Length: 276
Length: 296
Image 1 (cartoon, each protein chain N blue to C red):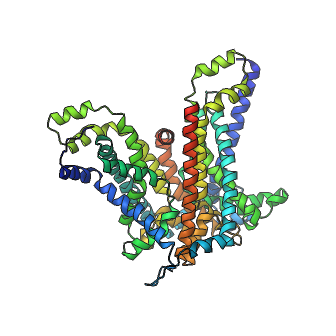
Image 2: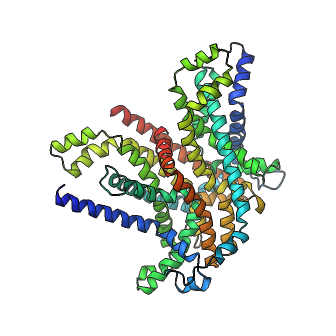
């Protein structure tokens, strides 16, 4: 390699790492300040803590009822994501494999509905479900996620199922499999890459979502992590140490999850964008 | 086609078995509220009282005359403009620098720049709130940097830029990933042939890479415009619309109109306006991308 090219390459590498350092510095400041007392943060938010005390973490963990919020987030994300994948793939399958006119209309309506922003629906949604006394339940929230997630999921599966050859399914049907058996034994396993992409995109969306759960989940025992963290911030606005510990507690599980699955997550985002 | 069902009743059974749950949920969560929402825009319902009257187009006229709404709308347009331009530029530069194995630890860097996207807007907003109001102020005062020595969140003009900065930081890693997907689809031979023909780095970028990246740009610009118009979380957690409602973007304005001011009809009319706008932009975008595909 020519020396000039080599120098350029080193310069490029250094500047990219410097940029990454700046990029991630906000998290670094949250981390170091989460160990400090309020007074220490006000006098110097920049330096390392005098003592590495876990007091803030213990207090924040208890006061924000971290376990309950974490379990709520987990339950809501898990059931929504699984539900979207199963029901949408079945729907897309029947849309692709039959040429009934009604299916075509439904598919068109679902794709067109992807243009509707959440804000255009939220007011009547709260009105309708509030009027029926159905709000303030985790299961209703999951039900709504099924609705909001289905359009994109059906669209994504539709494109993929179209590319699967029919022969396997025909053979299975001749052997006496019912349509539902054909789907779960043959088609659904073939959809694994799409399902994985979809699960990743939906986990990122639902785990972090704020506006919809803030409208649906009213009592504090139902709150998800983003809600709990936000209200915690409202209560302890100037108790910085405690706040930083609360933020760290919310960020940490995501980072651990990412450390293990980063390859799939990056791939999922790439494929989601390409297919859409 | 794999249609074994001949009779209508069999078709119906199969449909309900496979698509029944999705259809029901989709209709009750999306379509019903959407239609009810359009109906709401013609009423003066306050959300509580049992009776309300039809007001014809009066809500739309109120929206049209509402100066707060238009200033919030114009602010959102300004916000969308800056974020779309900066996010796509930065995302592309990052992607271009991080493809082709010229850099040590390429995958590590990609993974790192993506991190903000894993964390929700509320948390990111709260993180940056602390950075802007404590860390940067501390640095500014100690190093005597004038423009950093007071909190940007307390100044209406600077508070707007904090929103842009945080959104750029949040989304450029995501767009980078989409650009990387596009860049790795460009055939190597094409670049090599151009290099042999004497094209330098800049020429290759301008005449080969950028034209081939148009489909990726269509996706990223589409995503950033859409997200920009609908942004709420970062707005709420970072500035809360303040100081003095100077950074209230359109989503937050709609939220306040409906749920805090209890003017559901007016709020829904504004939301419907937002829908028309986002839909028009999306359709234009799809139209142009199809046209470009045909030409290419």
